[in-house]
Image (cartoon, rainbow, N blue to C red):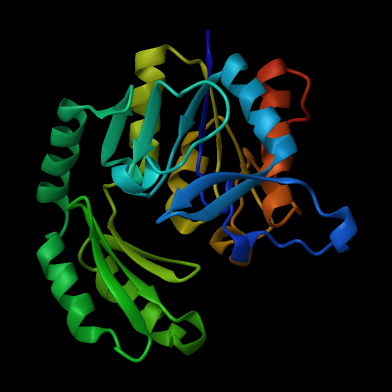
Amino acid sequence: MPVLVASDLDRTLIYSAAALALTMPDARAPRLLCVEVHESRPLSYMTETAAQLLTDLGDAAVFVPTTTRTRKQYQRINLPGPEPTYAICANGGHLLVDGVSDPDWHAQVTARLADECAPLAEVQEHLLRAADPVWVRKQRVADDLFAYLVVERELLDEDWVKELAVWAENRGWTVSLQGRKIYAVPKPLTKSAAMREVARRTGADLTLAAGDSLLDADLLLAADRGWRPGHGELADTGFTAPSLRALPDRGVLAGERILREFLGAVRGDGAGPEPGA
């Protein structure tokens, strides 16, 4: 039976220049590979060692990139290794099969959102009305599924984010602060549901996952084994579970460590997660 590996991308496997956390002396910094270019500029990186590990993983397991990015944003990324057959975009709103969104899956998701939570238009209107233009730089809707703000983090009133989370909770939505972005996402829109669908289609009997943010929590809980880095929302809140291993590594080296852990688990020679670790 194949092993399915569903991993978040940003700040889990790939990193912007601002998120690299290269705290070692310059002469000891790892060699980096650019894996994303946007508007003719390099945007995201992984270590060269991580690139080889990901190539090996793609040969040994069903690797499924699993991201909150829109399809267009995901398709800017050029990951090393075999082209994944499946990818999960828009936090589970789109299941790509050979690069094309599965229409039946998307229809199921949108029907569930219509039944179970407040409409996107209501949330979008609230964000536009309540956010302070002093710290808001951009307001975006992603694939007509969820909304997010790009903010100046140093000016952001984090009490406002907490108040937004309470407002959203009462309407069946969740809020996540990741770097310079504040996401408002419907609760039924989950990476875990899409991962289960890929597991069903592939017949995988073991699922592995990794992620760093609140929007990855359901994915980590649904997988048989999970890992999180030492940075991000989940680390900041001390998120843990019996099947989850909390790694101390931070920044781009955490991505390398996570891929080593995945490969060890796939090959059966890796140490299992330590409860509460």
